Image (cartoon, rainbow, N blue to C red; front, side, top):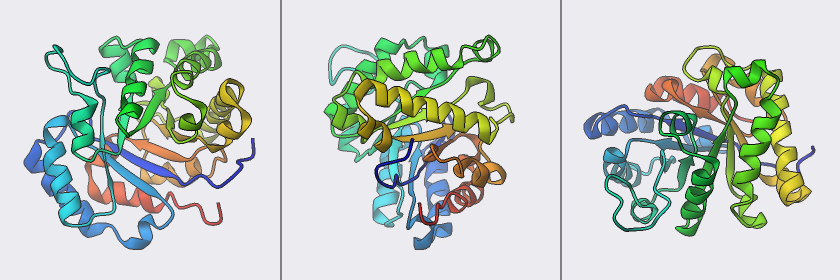
Length: 264
């Protein structure tokens, strides 16, 4: 599907459960020293620290004018109430969080988040003025059984139906094949393009061709600087959700630099 307008790539670093707030400060300052204005001229960049790091991260990013958006790794579906241990999207918005990852495979598998839970969280993120990055992807068993497209259709359909069409156009979908996360076995560019094109088609069928052409789709799963350029050359891939490599500022900035799409 040809995009109606250029889609600006988004490179997101998911720190998962790594770095205390002091380590986070050092990591962000390291990134700030390395990043140049030209690195982000055509690319958006976000980092997603643990909750306990967010205030420190916000302070450093804003005080030192580092051109990186602050993101969170998940949030509650409710704005407030008796939900011990949860983090309200209202609280994230107060910290100037821009992007919130929703439905990461680790949340789905380890914490048993259903498609319905993911949809409710997406509504909460949007309700509080932030952008959801909704993760979708198949397990190795589903892949080997030829169920990749069925699984993606179910997850994507549930996610996009949770929001109005014009809102879907501005959200982000992240294809993260579970079998490639943290394994060193990244999907081939052909695998990634096939899945991202399918996802775009599911969005188009659900909420219209124009929205399908506008929505940004990331790939996540063993992303490294070495495979960034070939992944980003895929026409339906608009960014990367980076895990382990985002913990090293030198590696992460190389991924950002390799993600430029001249003339896209």
